[in-house]
Each structure stands twice: as structure tokens, then as C-alpha cells.
Length: 112
Image 1 (cartoon, one colour):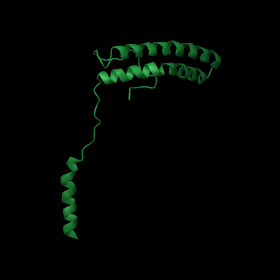
Image 2: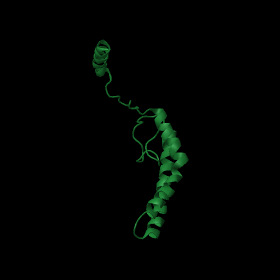
Image 3: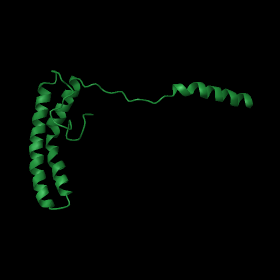
Image 4: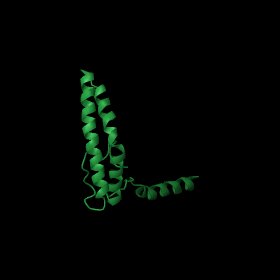
């Protein structure tokens, strides 16, 4: 029993340095990333409208005014996002790939 315990202790001490923290690989943007971002922005540019309307609805004071402003702001951002998507899709082969025209990259956040 003592030999088994000693063996397990030695094995765990020798294996401990090998069990380091796992780092996620950083995905380097390329032409595919730019094309994917462009297609998502063309397809989901309209999503800016409900996002900004809901932001206005959640405002504590004067929510009817905030909803109207959110609709207008969302409409403008949606048109801008759709046009940015057209641009990214048309120029996806041309660098730079990591500079989106709008922040965040898509209406839902970063490009998956």
C-alpha cells in the first residue's frame, strides 16, 4: 500500500508541471472573417431597430419619447450597418481584415 501511495505521489508531482493553464487560441482575422462580417451585417442590419427601441423602452423616464428616438436612431444605424456590410462583402479580399467600419462588428456583438 505504501509503495502504491509513493508511486501515485511521484506520478502526480511529475505530471503537475505538464498540466498548465489552457489558453484559447486567438483567431487572426482574414478574408473569411471580413466576408462573414459583411454577410451578417447585410442580413441583420435591420436588427438595430428593435435593439434601440428596446433600449428606449427600458429607459426609466419619458419612455415614449425614448422609444421614438430609439426607433430613429436604430433606423439610421441599421441603414449604416447594412451599407457597411455591403462594403465589407464587396471588398472582403482587400486588407485590412481587422478594422470593422462599425463597432461592434455586428448588431449582436463580435463576429463568431
